[in-house]
Length: 288
Ligand code: ATP
Picture 1 (cartoon, rainbow, N blue to C red):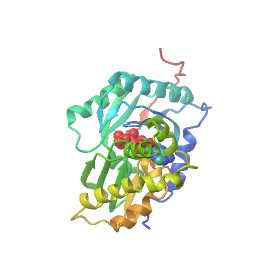
Picture 2 (cartoon, rainbow, N blue to C red):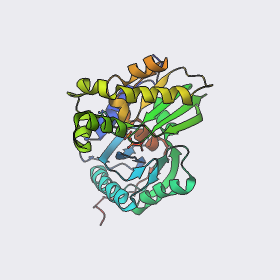
Picture 3 (spheres, rainbow, N blue to C red):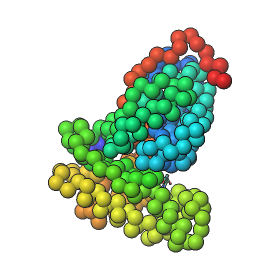
């Protein structure tokens, strides 16, 4: 087991509470915000200037593929709903937010992420690559971050606190769902719901184990020649119980999963953003 950032469980616990936070009694005078447009989930996170989560929201939406915005209007609609929800709870407008992109995506495509953020009236304060964002939360000095999302698995080697090597492969949670749908003869949506039901995961494990092994082989191949002290599995698909054990066993590596792996990268995007002042004395009334 490796030593991850001290207090990671507390950090993720505070984040989980911010998903359910009610209206703040005192609107913040400054904040940091991050937007994660993913293949499966879009997440909006707002922190105070001390990195304490204030409010966050997310929605399942199929608007991005491999970091490329495939449904611009749909992405703007989803983010706008999240913005209204979060701003309503904060009591102030979000002036600016960071976005993120998987490494290896052309800059012209990355720009679309900023355009989505700006289309909902939030200034895009910058863009960070996803593994660096994840490591803002994990705080690794040396290690490997493996982000298993909906469509892809991103692998990043961190040395001396900096991401020095990345790789991205088209295997992710969608493949788990397809395997379950095929084996049980059910629709994709039914299989997706079943996959995330903790009561079903033990019986589904033998079906999805080969996809976990495929992820392990991606990790082994894409880190060949690099030191791999410990592998940290993040992203929603890392929530499936037993994943770390399969990667440890079949890749012969030491793998761990933090609490709430789905939210590590979104939280890190917000932590990568600058602190911006909110409109002083302005009481949020909702935007048109
Ligand atoms: P990508 O990184 O590929 O763009 P994304 O950012 O949307 O996608 P995440 O939000 O990290 O990816 O993860 C989404 C995936 O996680 C989906 O396939 C979803 O079904 C899966 N997932 C979410 N929660 C669970 C769970 N509890 N158990 C298993 N899988 C889960």
